[in-house]
Length: 402
Image (cartoon, rainbow, N blue to C red; front, side, top):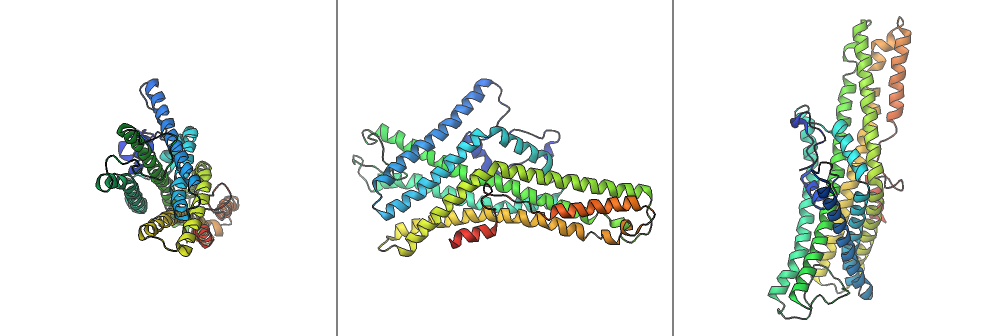
């Protein structure tokens, strides 16, 4: 289904979340294994068609928004669907323009971050458990888009006459042509706008899922790193003297820990570089939607129960999606800052290297490496929204308070 970036051992191959198949169907997955150049070009054309269809549908929605600015309920409802479209239009555009960067990110994840179940079954199982949140979010968003795409059809066949001058569409839109001129025109317009909405929602949960997937496994790599740190000086905690072979083993372990720590930090930096522009747009749009819908729910009068329910669904979706992203960012911060405590508590001060006066040079070098790693670990590894805000629960609280 996806490019196999790790082919040495199929049991260790990366298993991306099932939601990622939608990135491939939408033309956003960085493929490198097309048999012919024609297929590669066709895939690129399809990707740009998806982006174009979403952009055109947003224009139709914007036309309706401008035309009905005086109706606050219609404006609020239309802003929710339009802004979600704008967010994922930008996401699709960003993924298409940064295919090489996305491919390199996946490659580094496969080589340095992925944790196979065969080598660390407990940690791998914990990673899969953490991903259940995104599965729930996927199910809820899927129900939402299914409702949008099917409810107008039910309304059409149950409540509207077949020769009606105006027939329902998935969203409120104004067209530059007459979509009701014939059944064929109506059918293709409905199909075109419905699929654009499907692309919007599937891109939302697919990209959020792979972002959470990367964050989850990065946090679990920190857990493995902490275990290795705890086992660093197991044989030298109370010893007055160790031989050269054992001393070499400790030095090798420490170098491996430092190397792994640097690779995790490097991946997190690349992850931030790739996702931070999208996270900034996501944060801004979510903040606007939460403010608009929340204000309407609190101050609105004579709101029909159906409209009230829609507003509750919109604000709940925006808050939950933002919370999941911020909670993952906060988890990464906590796991990264815990590294400094783990190093400090590995009993290096009671080990041979803290007591030895015979091998003073080696002991000093070892302690210096320990101290330097503690210093580096005190700076949290974090994901930012293009440096404007840090992805954390504190940021989430700030947005909700505003």
